[in-house]
Image (cartoon, rainbow, N blue to C red):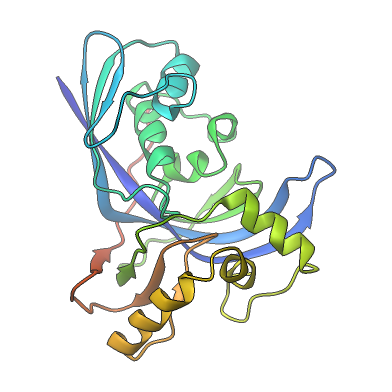
Length: 236
């Protein structure tokens, strides 16, 4: 049995720099990997089992698609610690862990699995551009952050669509998607206020949501204190 660690990603800042003819948005973002992580156990066999989840549809699971991309078969059991739907890239992190295990190093090729998979493959801290396929590693900066994760997710396509409908506003807090996300999911504001009242800091939205974060450690009910982690070299 082989054990893999799949680190969550946090989008610290996100600017939208354009829209392609196919509707995909071009971004300029800073992302970091966190010590909040899923654990994957790999054994001989087939199929994917995720703790606390129902039976997985292979056609929709990024782990299955990652295995297909690298031409491998395995039985994968996931101990899920990254909250789903929080914008922390849990599924992408799982897929990237499989690619890394298989020795797959084509960062741009990983984008066919999803926009966050290239960064999750590289890890650490990076500037991410294009539709997510252009990843420029940056020097690792140790950070401690506090997350407030609502018990609901935000639809990334819906948030981008609303951003378009709003005329492409520039977010005042480093994230252009924040105004659109608050319109798509008004309940987000409650969780932002809770974090700000508990910490005295200005909360920022991670990507399209639904996670809010601040710099520093502020443990307490409903909050998760995390640290950034450096990247691991890709090995073919």
